[in-house]
Image 1: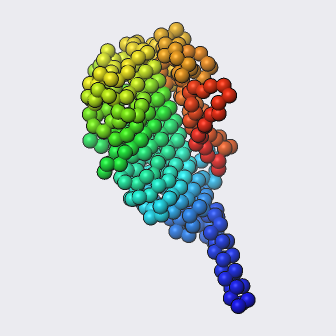
Image 2: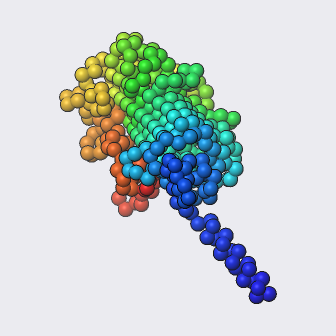
Image 3: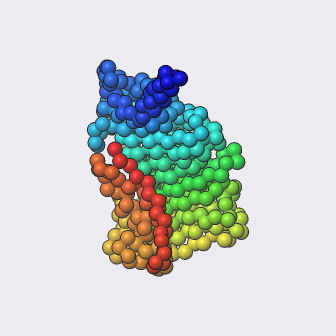
Length: 388
């Protein structure tokens, strides 16, 4: 009996130690405890492990079917993957973090009835990112350069650069997409969208989430002399009427001809709860067209003069009517506690939160907090962070 107990105890200890998260090292030409490829490190890893990767070029067409963290071993340097990545999880819960990657390929998923999160941080992705379908995965993209299009069912995209080239069927650089009856949710905050692209037409954002969406403090820029819009479109399908949708404090700039519509709301619902507020529209005489009479359009600044704004950052220049031109309600107060500046540097989600380079220390990538509270009341804060 004692022998049996000892055997069971040893087996339990072995299982416990084998399940402890480990660091798996990867370097070109690696041997022994250092894997030569990312694929071999993933094959050897258990859920919860970290894959620490030396800068170099690695083969792609990678399938990730575990909860892992992939990161560079050198601050400020990226590793390169030539090929695609597919997320294929059968577990009910998944947590995946990828940082400091250059992916010369696309990202796909093939998951059903899976919940959790995928975080991609400080990376360059040349192909598309498509996290769709019936999964309950929330995809967080922070400080990435996204050179093709992005399609997410549940997405939080903050501080990224979306180029808008290689658009599928005109849906845009970012599609908030509800599929198979799954309500989507989308937050697009503090990004630069369209800068550097060559497209002369088509949407930059297609908001068809079948759920709530929030578009705040983004800089939209057209780069061609002539551009036909709309730059952002909300179709006449699947927009929630019982939850607040937001299009606030964005800067949209067109320096050429074509007079594009910046925001077109095709939804005809008389109960659509959508706030279009505190935006800075430069270069269009018809910036907003709405088919819904219930859309709240207020405190937006429209100008045909690009001299009113810094075209590189989206910030209003001194003397611009956008300065202190937003809603005076304290709900929209700027970071310096003055009245809201219309455009992407106004309010608490100002692009000023996202324009400093990441450092090697731990960083809070996104902080979600109430815009108004009362003295002696507690506040609930939710932050997205990352620590190498």
